[in-house]
Structures are given as C-alpha cells and as structure tokens.
View 1 (cartoon, rainbow, N blue to C red):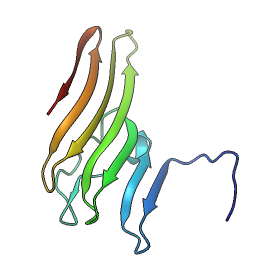
View 2: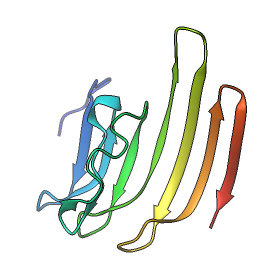
View 3: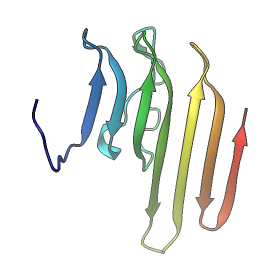
View 4: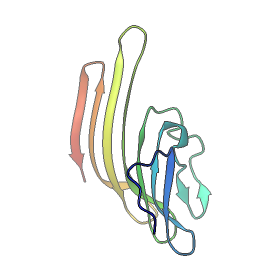
Length: 113
C-alpha cells in the first residue's frame, strides 16, 4: 500500500472489486452523467453548472444522491452560489434534499423530504 501526503486529481472513482463505481469525486470539468439502468438518462444535465462535488452510486452503479457545490461571478460582479446534498429513492429522483442557493443576493435554502 502506498502513502501520500497530497494528491491532486480532477476526477476520482471509488469502485467495487468488479470495477463498479460506488462513489465519485469530481471537478467542474468532470461532472458525471445521471446513470440509470446503465444509461445516461439526462444527457447534458448539469454540464454547464459551475459545480464540483461527490456523487453516490448504489450496488447497481446507478446514481443515488450526492453533494454538489459551486459558484460563479461575471464581469459585472453578479454571482450565483449553491450547495446541495441529496439522497435518491431507488430508481427515482431525490427524496431528501438540503440546499442553499444565492442568486446575486436572492437567497433560497431549505430541507425537503
């Protein structure tokens, strides 16, 4: 086993012995697709969002929630900032979500079940 003091990566997959992804850390250039039944069910979803995060996958390799966060600011100083953590129902969308969104001072936040 190797020990490291620091590792810089743009994308990191934690996999089972069979190679199935169970957890994925990603930056804005490597936002993972929404996988269900082995297919990307929402092509392009989140690809233009200014986010990085951690995605969770169930035993079938399907997305089942995640933690995302990010922000961006334009040349005029207008900004967007957001963070969310979600947990998905089996083969469904999220059933639990905690989120924060700030769109240039207009803030929304909450906990949904």
